[in-house]
Image 1 (tube, protein in one colour):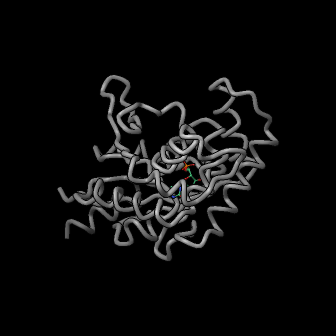
Image 2 (cartoon, helix red, strand yellow):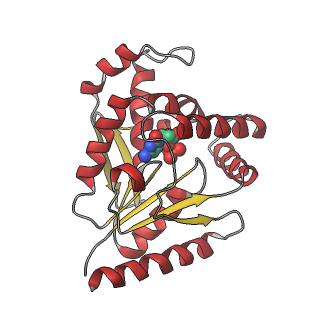
Length: 232
Ligand code: DC
């Protein structure tokens, strides 16, 4: 059967990765989390002391790019994909709010985007991929057979992210979580290169009032229509 490419974009904490993983499991496709790559680059720059006091010198950051190797490892026992930064599993660290705070500024750099888009396109070149991010339908796979654009109300997104961080043991207020989301959305939408935007041919899904099952059913309905079309 023809394997298509599924692009999922949207704001931070809209449930993109939850949906993307479930779709991949359902269709036996590969899931690729492009945000994890931007997070891994950010973590590397933090570990090297290049990001300090919420700022960095661009030239120093770019010099590091050649030293950054990003890969994914699928743990068949936990059924989870883990991000490897220069061979080291950094899955937990890249999800912390400290990395979240810095990642949008790093992902606005042209050279960073070029490196990661290239990697994303290589990983997805054979199709059978579900990739989520901010520019997947617009830049990485403009010819993807299906593009979904996820939205949810600001309040619901802040609530979800807050719960996630508290469950991970972080000590953070809901207000701070909301403010960080708003700040990241702003940087992601207004940056010069590949800003977050809905592709003209993307289907918007607002999941503010949808359960996980309802969201998955809706997405699969759209996707199965495209898979049928791709067969003909
Ligand atoms: O999806 P996420 O929250 O893990 O993404 C982290 C950051 O990476 C996000 O604030 C913007 C950036 N990003 C991007 O610019 N382009 C992508 N395709 C994915 C993520």
